[in-house]
Image (tube, rainbow over all chains, first blue to last red; front, side):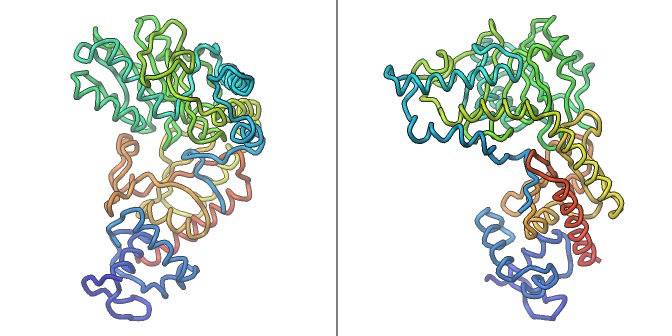
Length: 68
Length: 380
């Protein structure tokens, strides 16, 4: 996963979220959000599996979304 | 999975699938062939033509099968350009048409055709008065959709058709979203051309329908053989055409019952959401509308986010905006209603179809409420 400017997980404090994690938060919550979850905390928050979110990331990449 | 995006496409009907299947297997003859295998497929096409014609009040000779609704729409614009000469006429359309119409108009503009794009009111209705006022001495075509694909608003086509017929101005309606969902009679509407698409009414993808009123000229669009009564070349999509005929016949027969159920689902959805979420806005006309479409926005909530959260729960709806290389672009239809960019981007479209149930509508309401609370909590 590519690195972007430093964003930490709002829930667990995990340092430096990846571009994919930040992009996923924007896609699933809203583009203008200021707080981000790491993928595991995001999966827990949304009550889905981490694998389901990773699959979504792949779908967004296939669609050409450059948030990822 | 709950599929509530029937305005995008529909699941093929089981009985329709059974009818079309033999034409992909044992009945695979070319309809232009002279031997029995070919003759039988030709008969199947003609039966489908009759089914479609009956469903929309047309004569069989007035129906041509195309590859899709977009081809049917594009054909009309190509034809008027060829017949009237590109630099010598004016046409009228609306700002909320499908891209197959809008982009055809833009292509004609590059060749010198003058195009008027009529605005719509806040519920997406074109004013009959505005159509009348936009007519110029050299107006040759008016093209307005019967029902909008994003908001479901139904246009006053009959009233406009009556006016244009008296003035000898060609009238086309893109009825892709309407045919099979609301009663459509080409004679009643007084249109010269009408486009439809089978996959929107539980037929198969790959078959469009073009109605051309008897006596009205249409320039050729696809060149080659003499298929489709010499109107359109190319070996016919027999299975798709057979499916179109049966699907439309089935949809029209079941329309009263399905409409009633869809209206109930829409009511339940709107009332359920309004009771639980503040600031739910319904986009489009609440009276003159297709029975199964709800376009709604929630203040401060991204439609894109809502759609993806619902997708994670196995619910398929669509959003009014389109993500192009990471940029969330608002719908031209919603912007034409006068919504702000933010409001347009908050929209999602739920479109119920014949296979949806009241229980599914309930589940959609609950899932939207759940997704809304997740978005709201994170943002706050």
